[in-house]
Length: 256
Length: 263
Image (cartoon, rainbow over all chains, first blue to last red; front, side, top):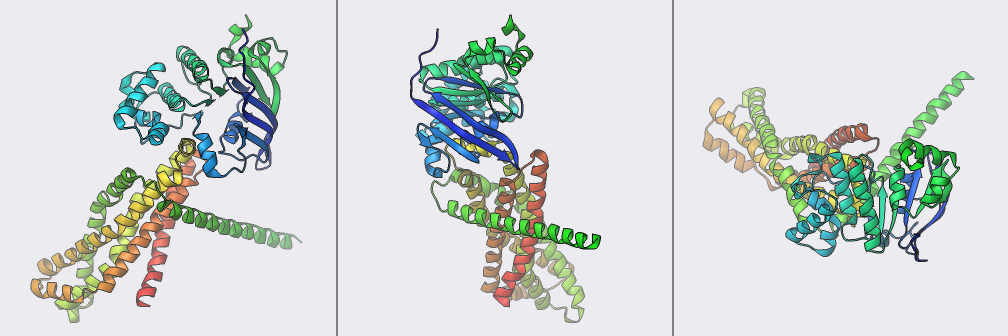
């Protein structure tokens, strides 16, 4: 059954172009993310997916184009206003980007603890309630990121992103490096996070099974631009050669 | 024709490097001003400042103490040998006191802290930069300059003058030990001479130097760490550059400060 989406636009990217040292990485990117929608961005490694995400969150500035979050133009926006808008976003980075010098529970509640002035005890309880949803046990809370496995670090990073129930979630390869069971758990969590808070999500992934599980809409970035977009069902039936290659190489079962 | 081309090429490369150098100085100046701005702006992360004070001040004390202690000892011995015709208590005491408080104490402390703490600061911040931790900080409602850089600068400004004062005391003690136990000077006369020649201007000048060295070490190290690129190689470069440039700036600025005080 097709999910009913609101018409409210949460993120709108228009004519976005980005170059690095005269090498064009993104050219004329246009898309909209609606409230309650889960968008998956796929594309080969080095196609500029993470660069697009970094432009959206203001870590990079586009050479041309516009990025609006909740109808506020983010390009060239005053830093203090940009920071307030970013506080309502939950973001995971490709390699986790957990703070080495902080314990895992401090990493998870970093934003919320400062914002809501929580005591250590309350903050730790909050962190515990989140990691349980991610299939982690309480023992990891007092450990440092370097003391847990890569998969666990990924889940702690996701816990940090969803802590405080942000309405917009941005995930950069959330399931890469995870076993299939944990990957599917993360998919469910992204789905439920979008559903329970009525939020929206952008997920960058290479995992086609994950795309089918979580996405309402898929866009493919190829040759610096959006070369295909559609629903996951349309994606499975698509004649686009790159989409076919992607599906075959990452999850042939989807073709059966 | 080839010669003209070569000359043009050399001029072009030199000019390019010169403008890059100027651009780097400009970037550093902007970083410096921004960091100073964030030092005075709340909220202050007192827990982080406290940890930095322990790290910079307390844990640097053994290396600073050892360095200045042996410098004081060497200075007493060399002065005694060099001024053999004037080998009395007052000459050795005065040379040890003046050298340690005006120059050796602050400079040796500065160089030791640049090696120990400057390298650590640069490596820590550079690692955070290349592993996207600084980017993540910005998206979590925390300003990296305020959370990472400001506590390090504040702690350096507090700790290095204190370290220099302690280092000076230990250095003078080293000289005293050699004077009394090896050169067999009269302890009372040596101590009296030390106290008599101790001047406020020397202490003030040493403390001013120490504060400026603290600013140099923390700013340079944080700057190179904060602007690190290219993964592990970038971390290595940031670490080396921070120690080398801090040390050169310490040695350059000590001359300028001395000239200003005693010119």
